[in-house]
Length: 239
Ligand code: UDP
Image (cartoon, rainbow, N blue to C red; front, side):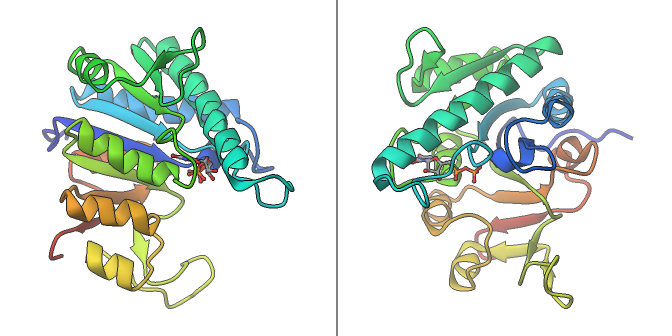
């Protein structure tokens, strides 16, 4: 039975790699359209949805390429724009109106990020895709997701990952890894729990926005978790 969603407005963060096929790069069309369906399901619940997708499936920084860090980071930000354009289009194909807003001005490609425009689109019921991260090198899309979630007044930041919550160690590698239902920001930072990078967690803590970590691979999981059901870990205050 459907229960009432607990949230009015949420932001979903997906890694770029989540969109990739078995070879870990580019966009797998089946995965793209599956995730578009997950987002559409939450949109149909009447919840306003913002979205940040990473860029790791195309490019993640300068490491190993022999170029300077800032240039590599700009390339990474451009990679996130490609993912946002693809997802925006996949959503529109399902009849879900979507808008891509880029932190780096890209003229004819998509609109530039503007907070008031984003708020207006969210209120109109469009899914807003925040592309190009924060627009600054030396940051990540986890930090961008936290920033956009805070500045657009989201009730929570949802992080769709490969596993169903936060563990004391990688459960795929460590047999006796302990899974948390709730964990505090400070504990996540102190134990380096790999929820998000430290900058993102510190920003979430400072602004008391809960981070809900769940597996994006379980069908229907995003809508379930938004309704407060299913398996997830909440990173929050005094947990
Ligand atoms: N990036 C950046 N500033 C930002 C967001 C992203 O410089 O505000 C760059 C950075 O090089 C990063 C890459 O874009 O490695 C891709 O983002 P991220 O690694 O967060 O993607 P994900 O791991 O979620 O796919």
